[in-house]
Length: 352
Ligand SMILES: Cc1cc2nc3c(=O)[nH]c(=O)nc-3n(C[C@H](O)[C@H](O)[C@H](O)COP(=O)(O)OP(=O)(O)OC[C@H]3O[C@@H](n4cnc5c(N)ncnc54)[C@H](O)[C@@H]3O)c2cc1C
Image 1 (cartoon, rainbow, N blue to C red):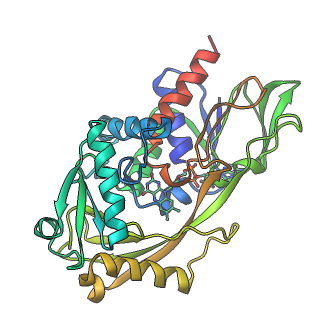
Image 2: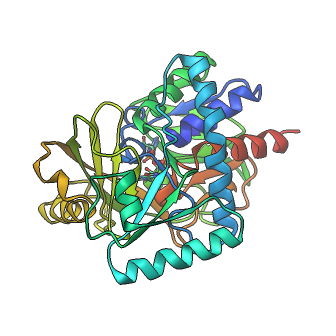
């Protein structure tokens, strides 16, 4: 079994190994965990942005709710604490328009039975004194939480090594090799690898891997996201704080992440002056108190987006033995545990 790609490759490879699949091999073009999964903010927020209780919302909530057990299992296996922080998220209304938006969200989510608390501006400031005095109101989502995604990547890499997964880095997969409509392996820059099952998990580069002209992989496009990392010691906030225009995420070590942009800039994974200026403007709108914080770092990553913005999960096209785990767009960290479960289950049942 070859898993061509890291959060994605890592979760899929780990879930397969835990299901007893032998000879799992993970092939990575560069080094493990250096792309979008590394660049992310680690927010696990299915409720914060949801306008309706659709199938994607159900999937996202299910994956978020797997996190406590997922984090505990990784700690048990590897000793690495992925810093799952269950304080919750505050969604601020800073304008009248924001306020209408959060009222709608509160109505449908309470009616559907989801945990959400409505706060006045004063109540929100009592909870998190750093937020803007212009806050008109807020929603508190106690179940929308955060994880330290870089620690998660280290834990996954450590876990798959312990489970005996063969990891090949600095090796690009160029094509899925076929016998008519059946997978027989992959072509890599270092030669072919034989396997009757392949899972493509190459993020925004997934559709560069060739299959057959009749069954190409779905088109995945990059959406650039930039981030700014500030130093807040002592921490300014305990909650993740979100607005319709930006967010700040406190880390246990005193870093405060501010994000992000959403740009169609091709594969140019760079930080821009305009991007950083916009992120800081939106973060200052949330909390003017960040004005004096030192800037520690900036970076950018490429979110993998399919045409409909939904993840591409499961058997791929008309080819026996080919699976996809890509197109996770803005929610790949959130969807990591469920992706591993779903793909490994689909692969194991296809082999019966
Ligand atoms: C700024 C930013 C903030 C974000 N914040 C959040 C958040 O708060 N919460 C959330 O849930 N999600 C967030 N995301 C989205 C999340 O990061 C992505 O959805 C997720 O990381 C995608 O994971 P992936 O494994 O598919 O892709 P990647 O992490 O990009 O990994 C793909 C891997 O495949 C490798 N690869 C590519 N081509 C080949 C090849 N041909 N052969 C072998 N290997 C190959 C790459 O080198 C890379 O290691 C954010 C993204 C960004 C950019």
